[in-house]
Amino acid sequence: MSDGGRAMSVRLAHVITGLGAGGAEFMLLRLCARLVRNYQLEVISLTSDGPLAAHLRVLGIPVVELGVRGVHDLPRGMRALREALQAFRPDLIQTWLCHADLLGGLVARYGLRVPVIWGVHQAEIDPRSTPLSTRAVLRMCAWLSARVPTRVVSCSEAGKRARIAAGFPAGLFEVITNGVDLDLFQPRPTAGAHLRGMLGVAPDTRLVGLPARWHADKDHALLCAAARQVLEACPATCFVLCGEGVDVGNRELLHMLEATGHKAAFRLLGFQHDMPSLLAGLDVGVLSSRTEAFPNVIVETMACAVPFVATDVGDAAAIIGDCGRVARPGDAADLARALLELLAMPDAARVALGARARERALAHFSLAATVEAYDALYRSVLSRGQPLCAAS
Image (tube, rainbow, N blue to C red; front, side, top):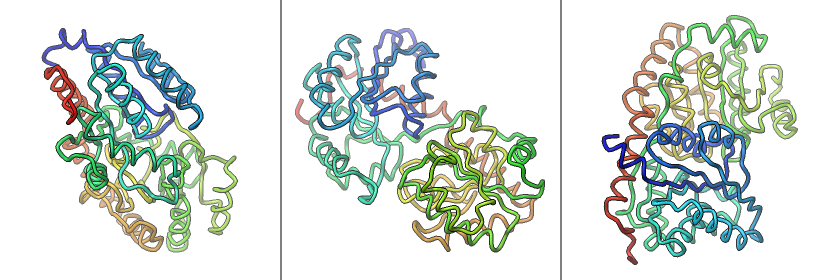
């Protein structure tokens, strides 16, 4: 940053719904790891700490957990949030995800009269997997969007379009795509052999990885249906599934695998701390999601020089470009078709496609560029001195 001395005096509070292992949460962690050198930071989780809280504390960033567990906790949570923010005395508040946008926005705008930037990390909402209470929160955010936030930052064009369609003022938006540490996520020549050894599969086995937490939006059922078709055509394939809740204790997922008739071709690894090594060991990455905004894991996998296949949701197609394939959401046959196209490639052609994917990640999705964009946004809001809300 060009004015680091000035920025160091800025007290920036981040308010987020929780600190589980999701895309928005990881982006917050990576952003804070860079900003901590130039800002005084605090992170407030409306719910519990989650697995990422420890990483923030290692960086020397205070984390406050409010323990909100449901609608009945909201009055207490609002009071606790206001007390935590008053104690920190922020110059600027950034909120992440819709519940934090609503509660953090109200406290910032009407309790502390501090400028607040809302963070949109969702796109289209699937009513099959989105609780009624969350849909109500999103409607309230739309109603308040012209009064509360100074700016709204979306991690994806899809998220921006969805919120504008819901009633957000278009002029409030700035799109800052999520960035990836391209020194951490990079090709590793021995990763494939190491991963095959760990999984106990033959050296010529094709490894297809689904790095996604257990959630209805990730549509593991679709992946299993597509995998069955892939394995019938290409039996020397192993599907590597990882993420929170994706482990041998997940009975629903185990039933899905059994229904494929190829349970032995799947490996469930649960939450992984060393994602760069795992992703670099794959032949192909895949997401079978019903809905996304900006799936970080696509960029992370591409940065490891691994081509990707994803359903055409959120910004997935724009991220992948010509370095992989997209398939129709909910269409197992189309997802299988896309996967088989990459798996059928000669090794040299698939490696070349992966190299192009790495170059695309370098050109468009660096963490450094994302951090610089957030810093510029913060400085722009602070330089104005007052919130830019319509009601100001």
